[in-house]
Image (cartoon, rainbow, N blue to C red):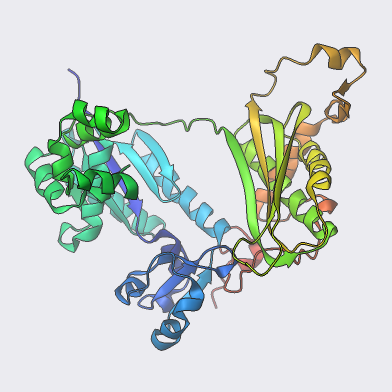
Length: 437
């Protein structure tokens, strides 16, 4: 007998803020916000901050008065802390369900198709909330439905209505339609602002209106994606669980600088740092890159300053994930686009054209010309034991016990992004482990 699919979407509540409050019990009922890179805008808000009317994405300088008046506590984004706690949440979920798709840093889809034969779905959702809360200290909400799109809406209902106890089961068609009638069409997963406006222009105001639309008509007027959404809203599962994340097409490492960069030596450090960071991400994907792009630009928001933006791309002689190869090419590319006399606000590195290790057809003429390709020396051929070296470096850097980096990444790094309200790396740095007295 075929079992109909049932999905549970588990979503952490105010995740960044929850991570910060987890180690600061004194802030339990205090309004808290987490800031974007360079402490520029609000990217996460506690329930208390939301109640004060603090909007998502608002620049910090615009809410200084409210922050002083209401005692709002700001935190700089602590990516190491958030990533570690996310990993703990996802590992716990994998122990509770047979199949899990990690959708984002704070969301995961669970396949719970056979759960109802042992325990009610709502009871399972409550168990998930209890285990995550007790083991990790993070509060989650659970939305349950026969499709991923409906599970998303069920989770929205679990967060919006306290009476649900943080769990909503939308496997009943009647309950589905009641909730869909309450939600504007813009709340549907995959319906963005522009698409929502187009749908409203033809009379589709609510999620229920979209569910009642003819799927084929929606495909003809909009796209196959909208047709699939309509079918999902009617309980027809069109999106399967993706247990293995698809391989990325490219990897970008880029940050706005804490202070404007005017010297080539400082930009070299920044680009070297981004190349190293991108290389680490590449190795986590178990891929090698053939193509490297370097980009730099001034700030488009400073109208009184001279503007300049440029990028350069080149290919390695053969794919590599060795930070030294990526950095060497990035430095050559930077030299071609650097211009003196500008105040640079951002720089970055993009890796693309990925290949699985050992699966690459080399250029015939590289071998015949003594290791040269298009005038570029094949430096990758000299990287003996490079994979082993990179593995050791990654293991040390991820252990929290030390940090190994290329000298080219610099030591003072005056260009790094501003993080004046950064909390300790409580779970990944020995020196930051909370001390109990």
